[in-house]
Every structure is written in C-alpha cells, then in structure tokens.
Image 1 (cartoon, rainbow, N blue to C red):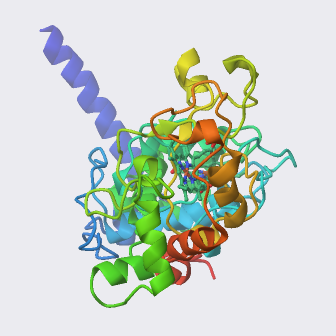
Image 2 (cartoon, protein in one colour; image 1 turned 180 degrees about the vertical axis):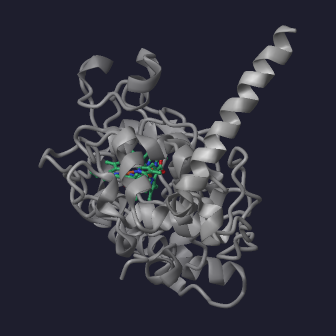
Length: 380
Ligand code: HEC
Ligand code: HEC
C-alpha cells in the first residue's frame, strides 16, 4: 500500500514537471544539450604515442581513457586563465611549452603577486609517474590538477566558483558533454580534473637526439658519447645510480626507480630540522626524509633552467660543479650510497669531462616537444 502511494505521488509530480516543461519548451531546449545536437561519442586519442625505445607506461588513469575530446578540453583548461581568481593566470603561466612546461623564474608568482617557495616543474612523460611534486605529495594527476586552483599563492580560486563560470560559458558546457557525456547541471570539478589529467598524460617527449640515436636515426658526436659513458661510469661521473641509465627500462628516471626521493648533498644544516625546505619529509613527517627531493628527469634540460627544487643553479655548469666538488658530505640524510664520493666533495671531474658530460646531457633535449602544435595554446 505504502509503495503504491509513494509511486502515485512520484508519478504525479513527474507529470507536473513535464507539463510545466511543455509551456517553456523553447527555454528547456536551450538548457538541454541533447536538443542542441550535442553528441557524446568520444574518439580514442590518436596523438603522440610512447616511443619504441621507452618502456611500457606505468601510470594508470583511474577510469579515464584518453580521448580526442578529453585531451583537447584539458588543453583548453590548461591554457585558460578563467580558472584563476582574477582570470589572469592559467596553468600555462607557470608551465610554458617553450620551457618544456616549466618556468624560467626561480619562483613562480601567483595572482596576488606572492612568490612560491619552489621552482616550477617541467611537465612530460608523466605516464611513468606515481608521486608528483618535489615532495611527492600527490599520487594522482587528477587530484593534483585540482590543487593549483585553490592554492592561495597560485590561482587562488574556489572550485564551486569555477564550476559556475564553466557552466555559464558559451563553449565549455558542450565540450564537457562531448568529452564525458555530462549535462551542464551535473558538472563537477572531477570532470575538469579528468580533462586536465588527460592533457597532462598526452605530453610525451621522446624525440631527443639521444632517442634518435637509440633508434638508429641519428648519431652522437665523440664528445657526447664520452659524456654518456662518464654518466654511467661508477668511477666517472656516477650519475646513473639516481637518475637511471639509458636502458629501455630506465630512460633517465622516467620510471619510478627505487631511488625516487634522494638528498644529493646541496646543504648541510646541523640538524634535519635546519633544512629550509623539508621536501619529502614535509609530506611524510618522517625526520629521515627531511631534505630529500624527487629525482627529476634529465630530459629537456636545455629549456628548463634554473635547476633544483629551489632553482639555485642558473646553468648546467653550476650543477656539474656541485656534483664535482660541491657535495656536502655532512648533509643530514644524504644518500651515502648514491653520493659515493661525498667525503671528497664529489666526483672530481676535469674540465674536459665536465664539457663532455654537459654535451651528453644536452642530447636529451627534445626540440620537437617544445614546438609541437598539439601541445600549444589552443586559443592562439
Ligand atoms: C603559480 C605558478 C603555478 C601555476 C599557476 C600552476 N603550477 Fe603546477 N607547479 C608549480 C610549482 C611551483 C610546482 C612544484 C610545486 C611543489 O613541488 O611543491 C608545480 C608542479 C606541478 C606538477 C608536478 C609535476 C611532477 O613531475 O611532479 C604538475 C603535474 C603541475 N604542476 C600541473 C599544474 C596544472 C595542471 C596547473 C593548472 C591547474 C598548474 N600546475 C598550475 C607552479 C604552478
Ligand atoms: C644521490 C642521487 C643523485 C646522484 C648520484 C645524482 N643526482 Fe642529480 N639530482 C638528484 C636529486 C635528488 C635532484 C633534485 C635535488 C633538489 O632539487 O633538491 C637532482 C637534480 C639534478 C639536476 C637538476 C634537474 C632539474 O630539473 O632541476 C641535474 C641537471 C642533475 N641532477 C644532474 C646530475 C648529474 C649530471 C649527475 C652525475 C654527475 C647527478 N645528477 C647525480 C639526485 C642525484
């Protein structure tokens, strides 16, 4: 009896709604995307795929397969300042394509003119990532993509405001419908996050001179070759322990090697609490993690200066000088295994060796990536 009674009420209220709807038919058509001929039939993404000298991607986007519509929407959101509090700053404001999607400023500036405390990070080959940011606090790109918007010293906006702006926009509601089949009224920040995640995962960089040499379509010079050997030589520059070697399953730390967060001996405060930035320790709260930072990719260094989490080195020469003679053995939590020569200040390279090493590092830069129109500002 009770059930029937409820169904009757439900049925009559539904009828009431649809009758009311008849009167404002024209208005409803505007609201209802299906009446506007919007189509939800996304096509699988056909953009850059993983190069054949790379290992299988390890990142799994949770129920978010890349589609042409999703990647394009993510790209639009990435370049659109609409997501920031005063509509002046997009993700792309601190992640510039010409710089392999990082910032040349030591510290990026948010919409209120306040500088952050870490160097921006280049964005590519995240299909091998599992811990993002210098301190690894984001495990997932969709979650991560929501953070800069609400960060008070970055884009300083709320997601409810952004959803309202997107719903009122002349173009975005259709784009969201085409990418995810979501009606404008049901739009949530999770859909924006999914679109951004798709665009971030589409940023594949694998056409450096080094890659081409591995694939047999280019050749390293003698100096570059010497630098490569030094990089991978324990008795030479000894870099591969942390940054990975050029083998197919490492490709210079594009995968999550065991040495994911390390202290490479930049500073030596008396105690772990003396580090200006706790890095991984700030996230884990473990005192043994203070001063450890994500081991970054060494791809695209030609475009990504300044270097390190605080942008302290302006040039690769300065970076190499650090590893050669500037390592601080007394640094708390230093990676003793990886920084084997710390007690003598570093790996002690000659001027020739330094030049060779830099020549090799620069072969890992990918000119096609920083000019690829598929990653560029879609509004220009
Ligand atoms: C005000 C400058 C600024 C803006 C705007 C900004 N970022 Fe960032 N981004 C940074 C900085 C700085 C870091 C490093 C932060 C840290 O480690 O704590 C970073 C790190 C990242 C990373 C981590 C990469 C890695 O390899 O771990 C991703 C991904 C990223 N940003 C994506 C985005 C997206 C998507 C947006 C827009 C929604 C955005 N960023 C907006 C400055 C910015
Ligand atoms: C003990 C592990 C370890 C070893 C060995 C090591 N690195 Fe690093 N490297 C790191 C870590 C960790 C960072 C980031 C540190 C930070 O920002 O505080 C880094 C950062 C860098 C950067 C800056 C990249 C950027 O995007 O800012 C370059 C370049 C670099 N290393 C090159 C080298 C070279 C060349 C060698 C060999 C001479 C080497 N590394 C040896 C762990 C290591």
